[in-house]
Image (cartoon, rainbow, N blue to C red; front, side, top):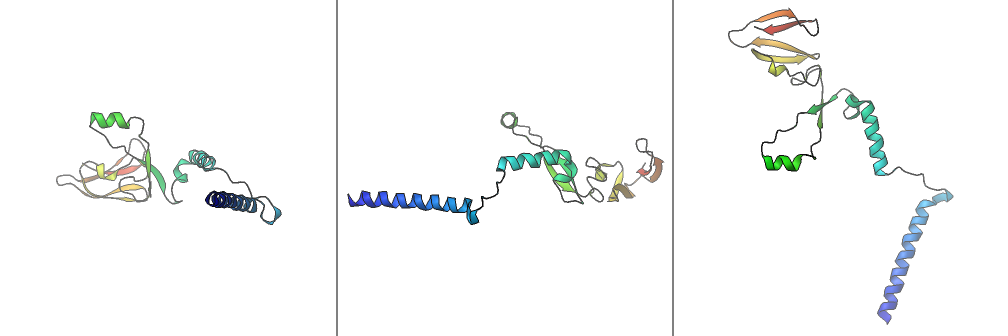
Amino acid sequence: MAHSFFTTFFNSFLLFLILAGSIELRFHDGKAAASQPSASARARANRLLAAKRPNHAKCPQSMTSCPIAPIIVKSKSLQSRLVNKQKITWECLDLEQELTACGRCDNDCMKLSNVENVGCESGKCKIFTCAPGHSAHEEIDSESGLIVTRCV
């Protein structure tokens, strides 16, 4: 009998402290606490902001968010498990000097033909040396209309 009395009393006392604590938090200094958005509301708001400014929302100001190419899975059993789980992942890059994303996310200077040494300067691929048997020539790029150097 004494054991159940103490258990009941202790549980009631704990409940009282919990309720008193939550009341104190809500009405501290006689004012109601400011309402806070739920985690899902904050996430939704962040997604909407990111959609409006996709290149700046995910990265520091001087960098751009570029998608990372998805991994190609050759196993049929693994492919079936990943069908609905693939998400686009991003990385933050400085397009002014990133060798694999020079000037834009999909411009990989390392994939230039017949080039041995290349860099990225001010968002443009800069060829330092051509592969053996090739030499640098300047020409007008058909897409941009700018003078570019190619190894031919």
